[in-house]
Length: 153
Image 1 (tube, rainbow, N blue to C red):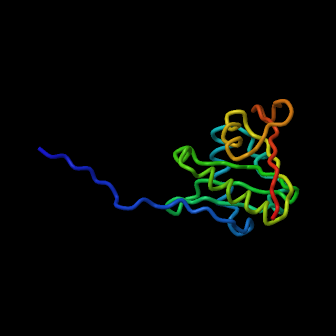
Image 2 (cartoon, rainbow, N blue to C red; image 1 turned 45 degrees about the vertical axis):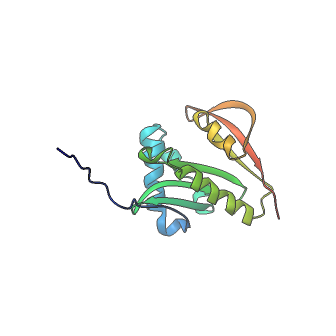
Image 3 (cartoon, rainbow, N blue to C red; image 1 turned 180 degrees about the vertical axis):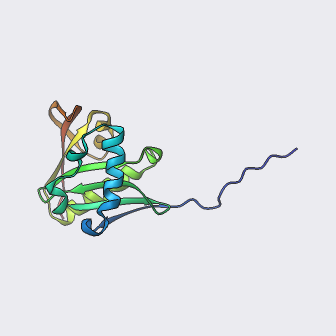
């Protein structure tokens, strides 16, 4: 007896792109709410702030569904990086960060800063970020400030 598995010949691609916040904020907030509000129990009113309207946003989609997001503020701060649980450790976060760092380069930022949750420190270190200062508690989650020097051409 032969058993066969039904496997699609092609897998959908993860597509990461810069988006217009006002036209696609529903998708951004879907991912961020899933990760920050539902999983991490961060109060919903803290998930959206005034920086959303002035930041550059990156959205990752898989098979047409929003699966990741991140933003770069006008002050060179990366934040709100989130990836849906089923697609973690699949390169989505790396793609989001690569595009955010490219935006920082285009904006001629000398450095970028972020607040990394403790469990994500190694991820950011692999991207060239270095820890700075002591860990601190923010919305009930341990974070550390991390910084990356940008090399301008």
